[in-house]
Length: 120
Image 1 (cartoon, rainbow, N blue to C red):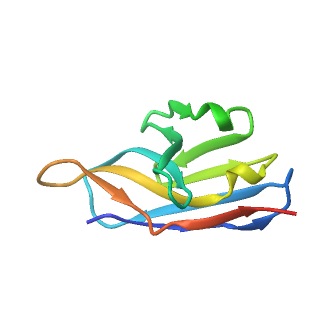
Image 2: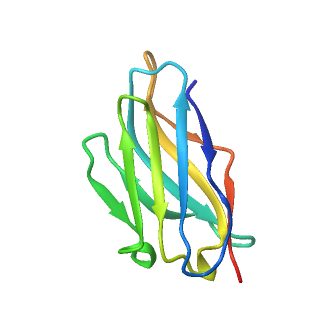
Image 3: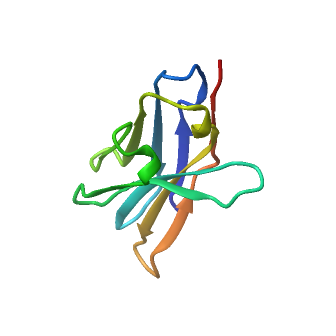
């Protein structure tokens, strides 16, 4: 099983920046699309940004122009650079990856989550 570990959350003032990182460890044939999702209490988890193995990106409308997702296929890492943060970006952010194992079906792996709080 591939495990995902996030880092980089914290408290930042409105207009500030944070960089989230996620590292995948374990054995797999391939790690396909990776992404970031976020969740606030009482709400469903929502997509923030995804990036395919080939580098094609997709962003939620609410973060376009402010967040940038990138990945290193060699290191199996994905990063989310968040600029011009707003209070409504406050949430627990989760790393996600679609993993193709050596045997069996592709499965969905999630990190444990990292808290991002935007407040003055």
